Length: 196
Length: 119
Image (spheres, rainbow over the protein chains, first blue to last red):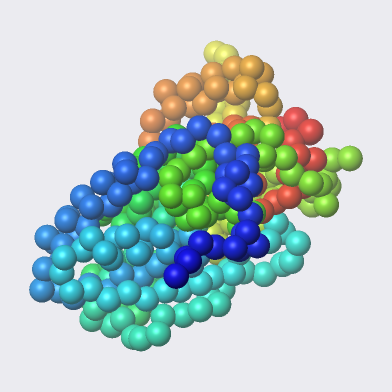
């Protein structure tokens, strides 16, 4: 059977990586670090059946690889929140997808792809703490401490990143580039914005 | 044309920053305190510094500047002096590149218009 995708299945690889600049972290480096994080979590949560909670969408790649590498029983759930829309509409952040089950008495690990200002994470941790989990820790793959506005303790952290706009491994620019298996800078010309 | 900003802000970037904080429910105060950096023997203030924002829940001051990197020597010096005189004060400077990253992250598409005014 021919498993070759037809030409219409998607744009060529060159189009998928258009605008991508220097690779900061290779796929192998990311996977190696995730394995270490998973070992630490497996050691710390043996017999505690942790619930890994992620916020859509960027975290899906990290969550998937982390779960594969964790060696103790664990479950997973996701939340989604509204995004700041550049001030076009007034309003506040709100949950648009809640967890499927109650978390009272559970050991929660909040899993993030990247923590930058800490504003999103702070909002979600406030919600989760109010639900009475037995414990609540944070695991992030990427950390950008330079822009931190809310000081949040990170129990598990993959990489500290420099102050550059990066994409790949779940991180997007205008919803693109999430699929890249590595972390890369965008070329400056890619970050041109169309004024509204 | 540069984006307009509502009072009390002196720059559209400040207004956008306040909207982002409001969106995430973070309390903030605008320019609540002026720090005296230098005064003469008579107590006349010779130099002072007023950070743009204070986040009371984080005990954090935030200063925003859209000036080009080669133009912020004066501001860096003021921040150094502030930290010398008030080591207990926590302050974070968001430079032009930081603000650009922040606006990109939060989908503020007209941020280039905001950067044309000096802050």
